[in-house]
Length: 366
Image (cartoon, rainbow, N blue to C red; front, side, top):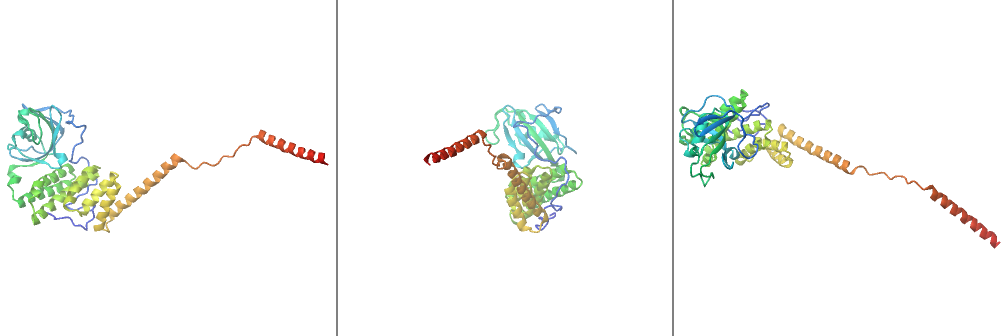
């Protein structure tokens, strides 16, 4: 089953088949940036796929398109056309959706038409008429969609399995499902070594899709350990790429998924601590890094990050001291008082008359 769980005595920055650090990265698969709460504004040409489905490409994909009955793994956001209300977001849930083309639910048939026209890695905006969405009655449970509502989908095709490559996930045994996920993980590592980072991230996410929460909930004992030995390295590899891309909040989320299963995972603690430090969350970062150091006290990468945190704190203290000094300024020196010369002259005259008067009084008495 691949390379097994990561060794705890390995440096958090050390490369292994299960755990990849990227030094250079351009564009890596991940959550798209959002401008406002509604569907993204797209300037590309409108492609008519069906009488009720149009598509505009946001980002080009690569390779072939899926055929009928392919198992597709997608991320998407969905909005109602009239109210612009977002009612579903798999990126936010951090769980790709699985769509078998030609076998999708009725309300997903418009989405299926759009996905069938896409290549792996492609991201597009779909406009689906209500007839191929939630229909005349809509949905009043989850998701909540009004009657006769057109739908906008921002969708990305992560990847797909052709029917000839194997069974659908639900028809696989536990061993087959974990094995398929592990092959995706290894494919991701191979893409990464060729610096095809977008394709690598897609493979990791497809591997994770094989082991969703519903599947993991059913596993116990050795089968759960086997699944985590594949799933956790995929999350950590994605976190490493996200750190290099300075997408620290997403990296924190990936590490937190691993720590929910393995609270002492050194790599997850290290990467989450590093990401929190970059976001200025110094106390939380120090807590993660100290926990990691407790398990690997000789690790140089962890020691370096803790030292950088201390230096950061000292720099902040010096900066604050300079700011306060600039606000209040140095203590002013007392200024010399300029004595009024007329007052001095007056005092001299008073003293002189006083002496003369006393002398006159003395002489008068004699």
